[in-house]
Length: 318
Image (cartoon, rainbow, N blue to C red; front, side, top):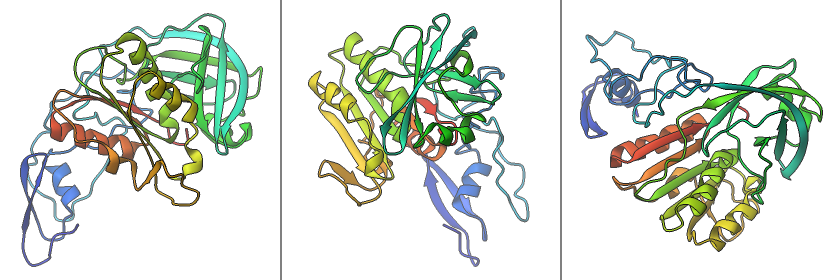
């Protein structure tokens, strides 16, 4: 909202009282005062594990408000409340595209076969470069049935055919295409421990969350798990075989959501994904994967509750 031109108003963000000047938005004020921070760039140095240590929980206080304030988002602005992963050595592997198959009307599964296994933990990310293409950071996962070979990297991506992935990779992934992989990267790694495990996934962000959920059922079968999965269109909820496996292993708190009502099944709730995130607790461990806006919104909810937050952001177009 934009403040009235005739008077200043007050609002509370993350427990901090803000005074909004005439002509400013509440977002501009919160960013300027350091109460919230912009989400980091998906291909930035922080996500790649190559940047300096994280900044403090509060940004430096502003010295003076400009006459016409603007909001700039740095390429590698750190997440404010995310739990940081200690730096880990990067391992490089080579391989090739093994297969590209359809998981749904607009979702593809890309399988990369490596010459040697690349050890990653559930929730980790990998930098993948196709021959002749650009590097893309993705979350390796399992097939929706739960399978994957030790030397395979499995990814869930938006697209109806391999040619649709050219915009993402800068090259079309067809069987035999050489691939370079580097990792592990990111701060969304699954950490066994106490407290409820809250997993939030938007569309193909389910990839990293599925790897975490399946590992948790084997490693911590008694741990409470709450899963929220959403998409703009219910046709893009491709992960039902995985959800059935989770239900069969004792996960009862599973919520599906979709913005559009067209062909929405009875078990899919209407509205945005974040509207269905349960009330968070201080003891929760929250993993969120999806576009920058989804990850940022869940981060705010986790910060307000004092919960641990682990982001797995998607590259644009993934």
